[in-house]
Length: 402
Image (cartoon, rainbow, N blue to C red; front, side, top):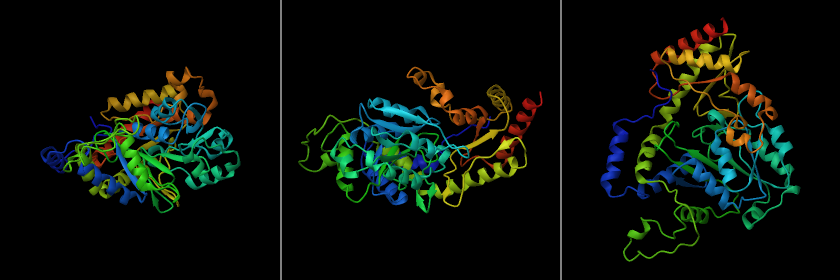
């Protein structure tokens, strides 16, 4: 069976993790601090805080920004449930909007229509690693400055709706010669096991706010709030006589460990070759499926954008959801693992129960019904890529010709 997205665990990773285990530092320590520094350098942002997951990183950020009951956060309806859950956990309203017709990213037109005086944050999602239209979203935000109503000093200092990128898929992607993490005010990455760069579980919050904000102070404050509000972490307390600490706020527990950071440092060192291989696989799929009438290929590179090539979102034209599901089963029967990214949120019970209805999002619904995600990862060799292509082609033709 060709797996869908196994992590790249080899001797380099084992050696670095073993070194971390033997170093005496298995929680947040020097490797985590180095990993944060390296991410900041790689992305070109102003500061980075490593956390234990995208979910906790984004939720703590939203709370730190003052998001709560009465506020609205605009998100795309075509995303993983975490994008909505972190908003709902704060007590704010997740305002879901439809996506573009030519890619899977949030629709600028729908954002514009959804903005109200209660809108505090827009959360674009770089689906599959393909960047959203950040300049256009920022221009939209600027057009609505007159109705923005800040509820605390941070929001007043910014003076507009904040853009918080859900960059879970897009580490290494490029937009107008900038790397993901520096596209907008704040970006949050996921380093989950299936992501391009993994720390098994983990994430990072990259801050890139205007210069009026003190990013060194933001780093110190965010590190504190992600460690129970404790004024010193374990590393700081190792200094002679530095055992005493304070708890300055009732914070959270979502720091990254040095074991996770050890994996991340190896992954980051060789990330360029990872991206090259992923792009090769995308082009192999493009080359094969572009010759077939029923295939609709995903956008992954334009004049202004280069994807991280995280997910290959193939769509099959003019099929029903039932046919798509039958095709997936047939592909699995041929020894190839595939997936679907994503079920639009109103299809899921939790959001149905909150009153969201799929009929309000026709583009997302139609794309979901015809989408199949193909495997893409560094260790997928050319022979396996050919097997994936053959399995997809034969499965589609078998089902549509019934």
